[in-house]
Length: 347
Image (cartoon, rainbow, N blue to C red; front, side, top):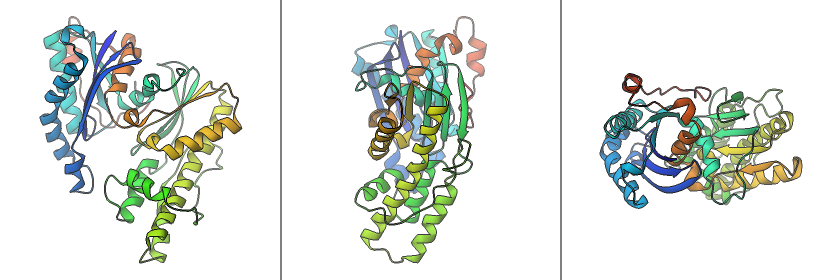
């Protein structure tokens, strides 16, 4: 089955054509990030205007790369949330129009569930994830642990109580005046630093699987106030120390949950999964602390950030549950609306 995916939840505009949920036939991503840099963050209205400008050229380029037409497509998957209302609306309304004109089924996809399905697209992994699995979603808006017994059977066992891990990275980067997007820039500085500061690891020993990053962020800000003006080395050391503390909590909770729920695979998804350092730490933790039959899946950079590849992949695996046929479900298709506050359990 060939699925066209469309992703417009924030400042990226992306389309992808995926075969049977595992084969990347083509994909295109463009972003308004350079424009957003001027504002120090994403301005929803600006992002929505750029989505309107980019969506058709992105779709055309994706079909051109695949050497396909609409006749090769079996269905269209689109992000309906969570995300920014304006950008989400552009993608959904475009997809509703195409579904009606092309008479192709429409599959509304939760962006968080999409992220998880990036693991099935990783061409560099010799194996695919096995159920039951543990999924760690680590991004700018979410830090969650989910146990999945199937593509449609999910249980959330933990989530952030305040800031998400990626959000904490961005806020610390802003406090250090590193620019936007803060997370990747902070990571580069951390690579040059040493762990000279013993920042707190909030909730690392709590009995549950919840997270908290607001206190860690505040501790870093207080430390910054003691060392003004910062030397380049002090800045890099603070970045390295902060990153270590943030990742220690992710790893500790993930390892403990994997043992308790006796999973066969661990997935790390979301923008923070783009960190090579996190992947290295998690790989060492799995190798030293878990059964060697448990596989670890961390998407490559091209699949970690927002893009339509995993939206299409999720559309394939969730087709039977979610697909709306324009021949008989047109009223449902036309009544679909974006949900910026969609949770991970709302498939």
